[in-house]
Image 1 (cartoon, one colour):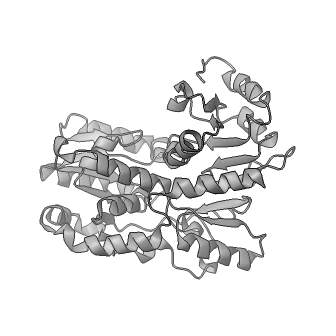
Image 2: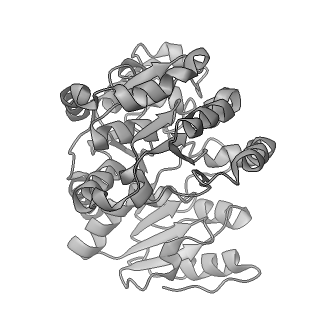
Length: 379
């Protein structure tokens, strides 16, 4: 369903959504940002094209591509991120709401006060819940689509320690990984540029872009690598002066690009290596290409002040050195040598094994998720 934008369009769309019949509002997806669709795509395709179901797709992204889709199985609505969105959540009438936004019921985004909606959470990272999410971030959901056994164990221990009401834990997987693996099989990498290095710093005061990013870019460019820098979107919001400095320093260099959106699949699949710190994309990269990533050893970003109450070592810590090279910020000049001389294949089998032990239902997560959703609808 195509939409036209204007003043008050959020409220117009909300009104249209609320006037839908109960059957039309059965399954609702909510997208908080541009990355949300990465984690919904396979599940939406399975529900609409394979199962033949209709869904509603509600988004806070004004230029969301799905808003211009002609897919008759998808009713799409833009509600922004202001008061209209708050009202949408409080007055929601739907059987199921699926989203990748944590902290439901913690701040201004609340569960419906007028209808017994069943809330399903999809992870937007494979990382452990007690490190990369705030305390209580997913406690108000009814069902959690778990990436792997680490999420199941972490949630069960959290529920026990805090005496929480048990949630339904589904052995789901990671739809984004399924998408990337499919793309890898379909894309002819011989047509892409070589020697491309992707840099993906996460946000926070200790991210590697803030600490040593410009130095790394200089080292890579001086070593004749091409650099694609994709900072976390919050870096653009929180430290615009750093972004402006990087633009001023490298904007005229033919081998440097700054990406402020989603990395294209062509760039992702033609890259030689990925350099990161504590960004979730690092695990995706290692598991797709079965080769190690470069980790800049900056302090871990901890979102949960009570992380230590959970006895389990966070996944991103326990497998870090097994799927990557951890580089001291004082030894950045070692990076070109690693990029050009290390035999990646020596780690392939180990990374494959870790992937199989870490992620449920590789390649079939959407089938598992859709069958669970249909089961909820029929119960």
